[in-house]
Image (tube, rainbow, N blue to C red; front, top):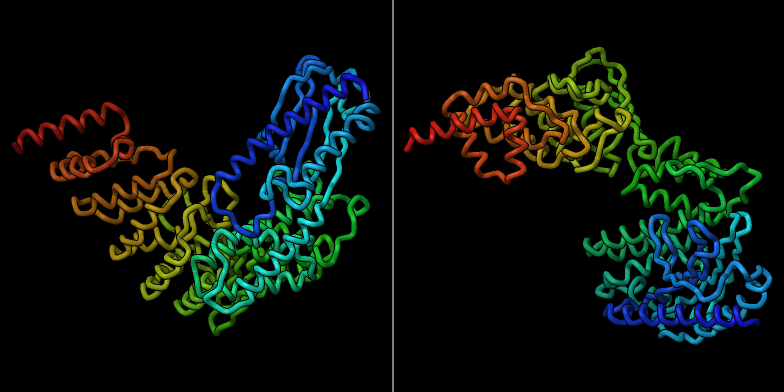
Length: 549
């Protein structure tokens, strides 16, 4: 090995050693750990990034954690060696093996303590050359068999002590993240997919009596399954050039899927679907394209976890929770057909059917819509507007709205955009225009609605004022409605005129005094619009105050 390679070797080892020692101290300072943590680092990459204007004016780097596309965690330094003068032959056959041997010795000896290295280590090289096609890359993968056997033993003992044993023995919250990851690791838990799924279900049952832990477990498992799917299962099959939607590589460019892994991928889709219906559908579509008849069946008929069909003398209903669609065929526009349709939808929502669904409606000839111009004239909107004509259905409509109102959840009845509305919108706004007893529901809706991404409800205030004369008693609710307006909302036409009345002007002043500065400014703008009209109101109120003193 010549002098340049010797200097480069010393530099790289020094940089790695210092970086690992700093990280080791940080890990030790983190406090109590789960016994299932296998080690914090399983990746080391050395490399060189060429300079912006000259290949030789670049920096050497070392990474000890996998980089994200949006960040750079590498430690860099300016080498004494001009890397461009070294050949690929020198780097790969002289320098790289010696550096690798030092790193492997440190890895197998747990040089930085047992909590630093995982049981496996990926060791990589990446040298940028003048031309991209000439970049130099190499990698090795090592497993510390002693450490692997230790971790396997700890994991099996954990299952026996915390999962298979009866209550009051159960996992601690700090263990759930690591348990979910190890459960999917074929090195740690080399069992069939059926056995892996059985362990997931067993953990569900074990924690059913502890709701807080059960919810955390489900969250951790969804994260672990999604990570496994995206990082381990999908890469051999998916094109890398589509950022927004996955697409399969041509059949002759992808391997035949392993049946066990495909089965686990479908299970991942179903578990993830409780929280992320879009990913569930995407994963199942990929599974179907990879040849899974089970996934094809799910896409056709749903997951099997909801009541996919219902028939009454007044209505036929069909639902697919995977595709997030509900179909209602009414026998006519009667209170009974709308009652049965609403009840079916409510029952589906209680069975964890996605709130963000699309409705297909047939058998109805009435085309009612709420008097709010910006709302989409969709079948979903029409169904709820039609149902509102029957007062006896109003309690059921409220029940539905309470079930589905959820911040950041939007119906799929239109393409995402300015007409998208939060789940429950049509029922809530319609009920509020029918009867004042639903004002509490309207308040809850307005406090929950996403003002940053929803604007279609902004026109509701005009419909509200057309329905109810503005009084001092009604003013607080009006302000809640205005505060729930979208960020792009414009001043309400004619609203300022109401506050020429003394009692309303003074009540508005009292209400605004209780608001935060930003909210007060927003309300003044929506009511009065221009600065001149706002100042006119301020002078009017000041005069009224002085007369009352």
